[in-house]
Amino acid sequence: MERPIIGIPLGDPAGIGPEITVKTFEEKRVWEVARPFLIGDLFVINRAIEITGSNLKVNVVSSVEDAKFEEGTIDMLDLDIVNSDYEFGKVDARCGLASFKYVEKAAKLCMEKKLDAMATTPINKESLRAAEVPYIGHTEMLEEVSGVHDPLTMFEVNNLRVFFLSRHVSLSKAIEMVKYDRVLDYIIRCSEAMKKLGVEGTMAVAGLNPHCGEHGLFGYEEVEEIEPAIKEAQKRGYDVVGPIGADSVFHMALEGTFSSVLSLYHDQGHIATKTYDFYKTIAITNSMPFLRTSVDHGTAYPVAGKNIASAVSMIEAVILAAKYAPKFNHK
Image (cartoon, rainbow, N blue to C red; front, side):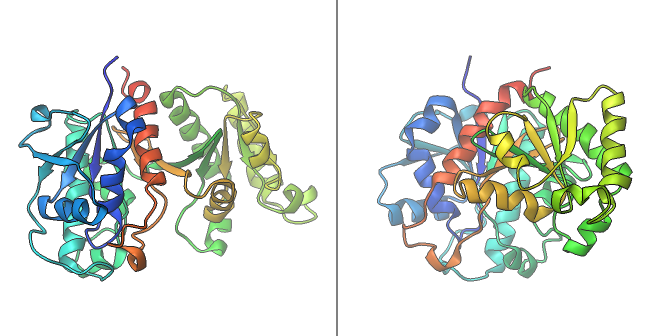
């Protein structure tokens, strides 16, 4: 089977995205499973090659079909947005605009089936704002291009896969969002997403309160909202159990008892995955017409341009995209 083509938008030029991209193209494990393809600016990637001391060559092409996909070469589309000097580690409107355009172009190529998946590098919210880009992050950009509202985010690290009932809202708001309809909807959508990735097994829903509320002693969300939603999903044939205490459910999933966990708010799942292995926790955006994986760290402005940033997360993101792309795209 031919290795999938994984598009890599270059990220914020003023951050660590360009240098970890170079290191990713140098990684033999990436070439064993994928054909990486870069969407960015020639000026930016050449600067990153110089900073890292890499021997990689750049092959600028006008289409994905013209790529060589030879180890030692970066095939890329040059959008020619940032084509003159800029300062590392600084908010820059030009860099913000470029990072958006890279993602937008990569997503469109995925929609056109020119790429099998995309693996994104970090972007900076302040630079996006400075450029008056009307999106705060990758997910919102991809919603616009794909036409999919509220795409699912899943984290994967080792054997642990975690979905999130809510993302960037306050903790008080996240608790308010733990309602029967939403829990049921997410169980169904997450189960379908797992099926599309080719992953089988039982999903567990994490508890919200200590000891899952102890039948109302520490809260009623489990009794009134979560358990009824799980029972309804079971009636509909979904392989799901819970709620299971958040102090144990992630460990059980790591050991293989569950194929995935639905966490009930942002930090509940983030803490579990990132404590286990911060650098190898990879984000996967599901329920769109194309697959997207991503590093789960930021632009790291303080160390940008110094050739000290680790590329472990980016390498893992590309490898994971290559792992799931064939099943995700299978009709």
